[in-house]
Length: 460
Image 1 (cartoon, rainbow, N blue to C red):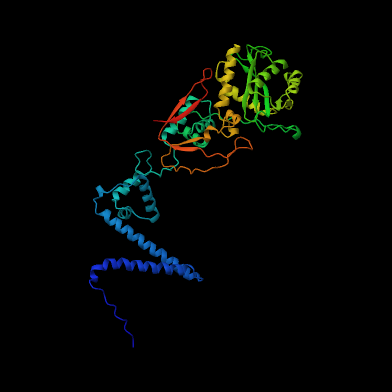
Image 2 (cartoon, rainbow, N blue to C red):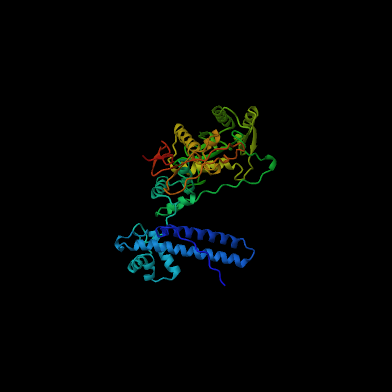
């Protein structure tokens, strides 16, 4: 005989609380289901675990469909002309879902509460580009606005001598950080001449390890070298020996003293003919007076001006001279690389003057621009003066973020290496400032107006 369950009396006026009771019952059922799923997930039986996961997924799908049904019912009450329009990126997502589900136009229109003619219009104009395109791919958050592209292209047109890496380094020093590949893509958007390929670094030949000197601090090693800078007349003549004697007025003999650790031009001088050892010592005296100290080592070639009196000068100042290999390119690579920069970016783009004062001004202005404004890839984008003086490089001080939706980095302290200084201090990362516009200023150099000297500030 089956026992009857005990009767549970209903409270008075229970019809007035049916809606509250329904919510309580659903909440109790949810609690029971969660407990049951937890037991299934921890069961040693694989079939029980799979059954619990299957039930959870089915329940989730059912609830999502109920959510969509409720929202669709609300939107369906509006006339099609009054419903909000889908964004171009959402239209592409709808068409992708249509292709994945195999819907026809009517089925897709019914699900997303549009007409079949609307779906057909999207498909017809699927491959359109530009701002008026009905269907567009999502725009990444790291996309730079158009004025940044305009800035890069104007820099290339104004200063054709610089390449993509140099443009990226110059902008980074002003607070606008772009990768060299990003600069290349921006330049490619307009049919302009491609940048000249960067000159490869000269390879230093193998030397005796015991005689190799590597600069470890400022004034540790000075590199000294000479080069010929032709005037506008040049060397060539149409008769044998087809070249004039390399001396003034056909060329200048330029001597450069370079600090190899910071790459800073310590001193530069010009001579009408090949300088003697006495003239070289006089120029080094000027360099020492300028810096307040002599180096520990000098690295030169084995020319006549680096013998005799030059060796006595080194002995008097406690300097140990080191010499490059005879007849081998790259034995004094750091100074030779500067000479190539001096000619490619400086003297070959102007009419080299003939008087001593004018050529002195040209060399001094180029050396100052090279030291203070030209970012150096070997120094990580810093300038020689920044490494020489031990200050924080400009590109590590502030960053202008132009992308309106790009997330700003969190502030943290990290270790940054300045050049090759083993005693580099911990510094905070650069300050990131979100801006909507920038103003670029260029301060032309009197005798070298083609060299970029840029500063960037926030637009008002």
